[in-house]
Length: 227
Image 1 (cartoon, rainbow, N blue to C red):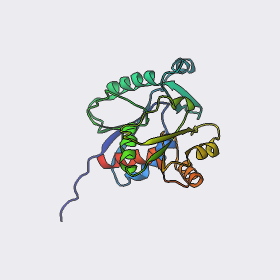
Image 2: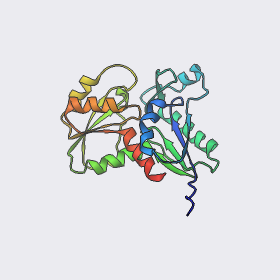
Image 3: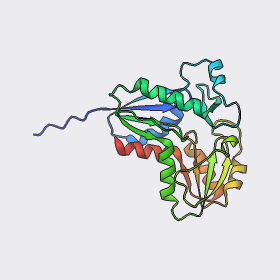
Image 4: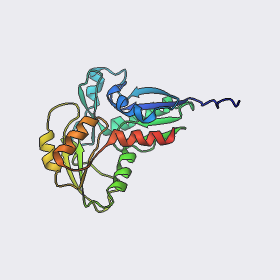
């Protein structure tokens, strides 16, 4: 009788730009990896920082901004460049060669991250996946978590698509009816933030009557391919 092959456990590090852990994200993503021997670790860009430190990371003007949340669910607005530097520091600090997959749980733009393991960054996964799925669409609706992100939003590759932008936070407020009206003329919609949940996706799809793509589902599927 042949012995069953020994399957080596893999190590995955999930990086959030807020505080870790993020069970609100990971619990929805885990079913994609059923049957995989996987050790999951989480780190956050705001881990260990005081409220005063976090306040200093807020955007001061019209510069790029990103949205995340704290342990208690409080929404936090962060300056994009500060987040980029902080995430780069974390990758350098944690990349000891033993991590098989780095997963960046933010759909913002990050450049220059080059860990030894595989990098699954939410931004490129969502943008390129959207471009492939929306090949025949003439207009794409994009839901962002903060109104201030509308001016700096760029989708790569965009092609000749017309983008209809709206906003609704996954962490605070209730702007879903207004957002749905602003997006209902799009051929399909993408929820461009890892904070949006599957129930939120279903709600938006029902209100707009259009296909709606959820960032965390697209990233979970991408991670499943490299495990």
